[in-house]
Length: 163
Length: 163
DNA sequence: TCCATTTGGTTTACACGTCAACTAATTGCT
DNA sequence: AGCAATTAGTTGACGTGTAAACCAAATGGA
Image (cartoon, rainbow over all chains, first blue to last red; front, side, top):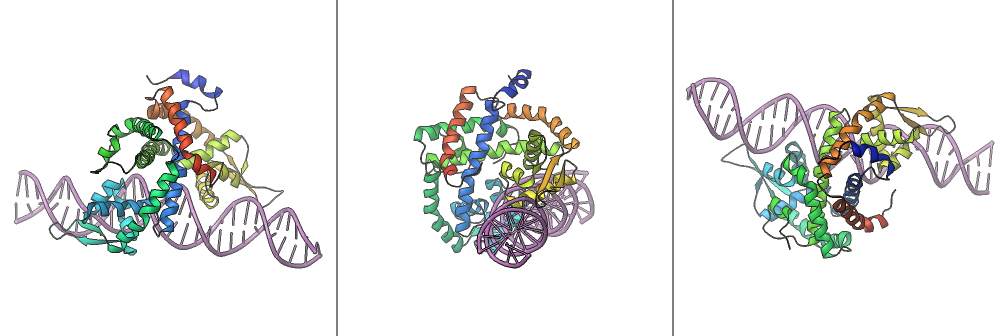
């Protein structure tokens, strides 16, 4: 039931071409605004990005070294991108690389004490930012939002899987 | 409380720390998935990104040359970023620069016939992608989603304004 | 055993966003 | 007129994402 020609004709009369377009715009804009605040928080604490934070969080959660590509898989980071990401974290002594001895192609990454410390310094302000960003929505609204978002991305998940 | 897909998709043993965190992750993930498809469409038609598309769309909408920083303002692109964006569009002959004679600091940008043609080739598949991305949501769902998203980003708009 | 294939990861090239520093033209104040 | 402050725009450095080419180790036949 894709809306066909009818849609084209309606297009110009409304402020938005369609509720779909409006929702899409809202989606992008809202995510953008909120993400900016998180990125800023990460910078204030010595990280360059949320990508770096996510890598650290994954490593802390796992509690032991992980193959680099395993990390990439969990962060949705594409394979070539993970190399530089780990490079920069390693440069800051927040993670460490170690070549696997059994399969010498594999490189393990682990979080260092400095990395763990940085994460723990972030835990509280991060919690606060969550509350600041979405705390004004009721629990029912949050759940409704989550359900709608899940449904919204459903077709994108089916084709082009990942994670 | 319903399980929530995201919990299953991301390997995580614990439920989310809060519905806020869940909503936030859903927000980021959904936007990301949908945007990827639009970026892909733009590439298939010879554009590098949605940023480039937005610049062209603004210029077409205006119908006459605009100062570069005016374009930057409307795209939410930060000042230094717009230069390279216009550079690359100009390299592809999709836009043209022209120095203002009255105020020689100002540089006007306009869309070229090639740019217009590219845009018109994009109109239809873009419409189709909108439908493909969100067409499975009812009108009521779309409106509900938009309202929730608007409410969600409300606090971020208050501090750190921008049109 | 030998060689093609697959797999883990890196390199390179390019587009983009952000920040800081800079140039050039204009405005404003005296 | 003269000079400081503002404005328009560019440049450079860095982090990130994506795609294509690539290297090296491991695997799987024939």
